[in-house]
Length: 420
Image (cartoon, rainbow, N blue to C red; front, side, top):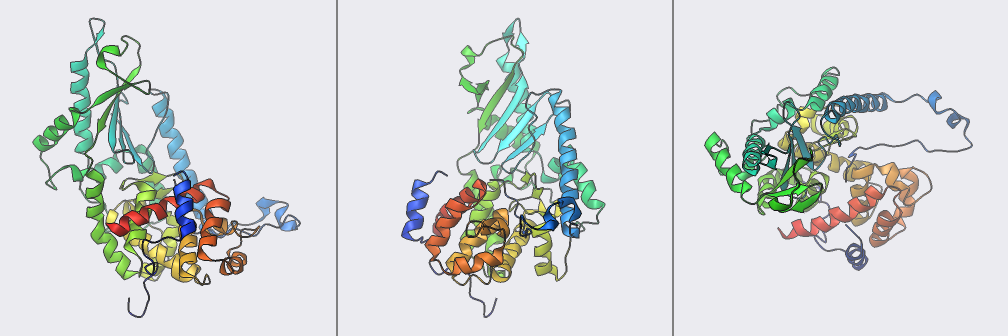
């Protein structure tokens, strides 16, 4: 980008002394990823005595309706799950959850903790648990998980199918954006198109390190009670280098978009890590989708103006494509930093506020500096502070705990990706 100074590179990987101290002392999120400018609330205003009388903007109406469609689909699926499982878990930002057709087996890929968890009913033989039979069943479920493509995962998810219909009814952009046939866990294989034999061999190798968790406790096989009717969970560690492989896979996409939008690669990578732990199927209640957790009605619409010079609603299938998700996320970061937040003069201060705004919106982050959700009112206060003071306000005074922790995590991970 000729004539544009790349942001956040002046002191790349180096934090002020206060930042270092704060991050070392602080404990180490589900992000909305949306740009929402809330109304300034004045308790004495007659307009706020009856909130229902204030008309929502078309974008706010769209967001509410899509969120309601997601919630309806979620509750319907959770009701089905409760017929078989006490906890109706569904996919989230860092966990891809799937069930067998009859809901007798639950499969969870935990991207944050780098493991697969497969839960089944105990199989008995002569009043004792038949561990050989259970291992065979679990390995079969593991093979199914390892051999699942992004397309198949989305098409077999009842929640996503229903949400896709809600977006389709609004003519969301998905033409030419169908997610590829690559495997969700393709980094576990040397070939992009592993055979059934490859999948079977990989599953067998992974099973050799599996352990059984009974009622959230690890147990040896001999100590697992029998005939209890309880579910048993096999915990299967994934290779230690899997996450590094994902980083290397996405690095060319991140580098290309960082150059295109005059951003720093380490910031984009740190946001991906914090938002989804490199889970291409990441989904949150906003609803937000994909690696960088884009909310279509807010961040997505802002990014499409940057990308296509017109506002568009992006379908979930579009955002579950890693290449497109990173492009949209980078475009949105550029909009935040170079356009919406341009009145923050110091580049480091603007960076810190951009990270907070990416998570919870600028109006929410503004409350760390002023008593109302007005970004414009916060600008003067921010510009009077040093960057380390801005950071301190964000991690101590932001109204949402999620945002406070989010800023810390992104900056910690940025230091790692600077050295990569």
